Length: 470
Image (cartoon, rainbow, N blue to C red; front, top):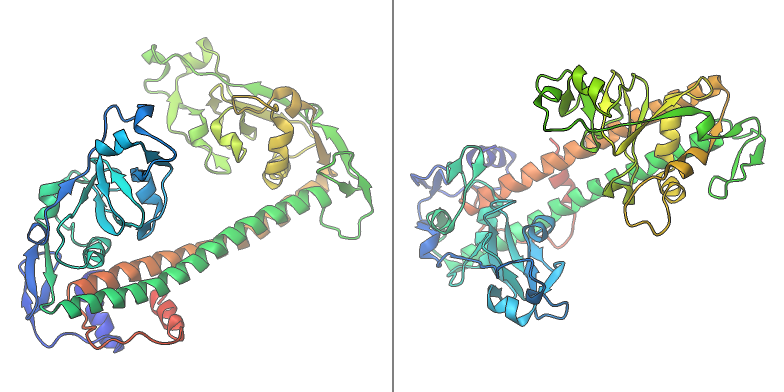
């Protein structure tokens, strides 16, 4: 949505007024601006300077946990909202002397990684050469922050392919438009602070809803695969402390009696005949992002299967990552719907007729924290699932017909949760678009907020939500 179309929408709704007269700015992202507003390049508002890094940047002498200045990485800015309040590292006196020091409340902009993201530091910080800053800014830094946050200022600027390319010159040459009166600039900042805070609150509520849905999803799965669907079923002690009681008519069986295990391998990359024009999916941990797998990022040839350590894993197998740093927090699993091969960091479980593959998958998904502890070797330096612990762990085994009912119930519940999560994600997307459009409209004068007065109550929150989700 362009800034001008946002203005028309606002005018139609009667929520915001437009200025009486406009002029053509001659700048793509600005469009028509109020006649009384000035158009100026950022470099005429301040010098644009680049950060600096001590070299080599990984030298420990440049860092000190008790240092006065925080060390800002792109990841710190990517994870922050408007303000930077903390980082993961601090600089030593030597390190900060070789970087660029920013005192609190200075605006800086990323020109690498998450390109074009603005941030204002609330702590003493050092920035590297992946950032630019504005040491002599003649206007409130929050106004220029919003110019960048509106995402339109980069339109047609510094493009190299599809990657936005920014440096001190390209940023300095960006044209912005400003009200003549300083008080009107501050009024725009105050307006956007208030309106974006309302939208951000609504976004946070939707994000929290998504987290609650994920927790509920886990709880529903865990209860179904460990307690069954009949709340009145007689129970018995499973003998497994974390599992507690299970229905009396269920068996408890070590996993090694329910399935066969098959390992994977990686054909050498030195033999191009193993990888060129391959047709057999080769699964690695990076492919384990969905419950069902029928395609992968890499494929191997039949020759690779014949001559290397990798194996064919027939469809309907439960594939599991057994060696990866990700095992600190989750257990990636998936079921293949086509024959595949896989790498050495994975294991395939081929279940016999006592257990359905989908049931085993849901048992794992519903009890990840407990199984991570049970299957990992205490004190191990490498995150891995130990085969001995895996093979000897007990799985509850309902009758086959009951397994099918549990699977159907879980799938039905998950579909409901998925629909609710999709709705929440769509609401977040719409509100983010609303936020960006509103910022762009305000900093380019498409809406007139000179007479805006901050409400004394939060009664207009519902209006924002309705507009954002319309």
